[in-house]
Length: 202
Image 1: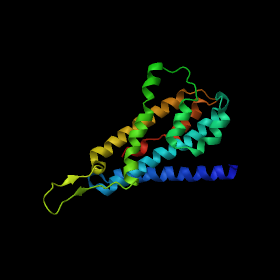
Image 2: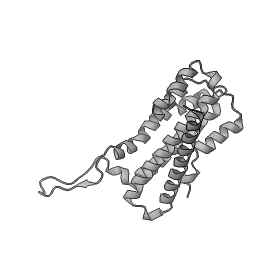
Image 3: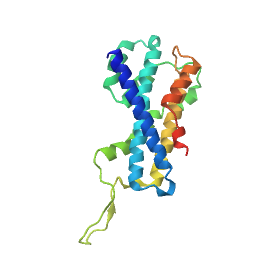
Image 4: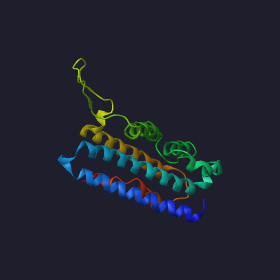
């Protein structure tokens, strides 16, 4: 990839990251007036915030930890050909963590399972799952709620927010602990730029 293309992609992804954070904030500011449609929009935007942030972050940390990877060339050549979830899997099992608590490291490894659970809402919404109630005109069968109906509830939206924050906290732990030629300030700048949660505080 040429340097100009890389810079352009970074600027575009940063714009999308910021704009989707704003969308989430604006929906939350509606308070009691949030509709089911707002919640669907929120879930998609929140997913984009996480996916865009992790994709951009992985590019940054992989390059910053170059000398610590025995398979750097292979990772660098394929990093943009896999999903953000696979990027994270590859990275986690290619880096070393020094000076971190082993129990805490183990506890944060549930990030992969949390990401899979978090992505389920996005997958259902974008893959055309019906959302709502099915009414049978004949009256022979009772009305039933479709499987994806719970995605539009306030409770589910709040659960997704909690899961998002948990994933980001785990990722921040990894960024602070992996071996790389990065200063503490550099690590914190990555966290601030790509793993911010302040847009959820309204």
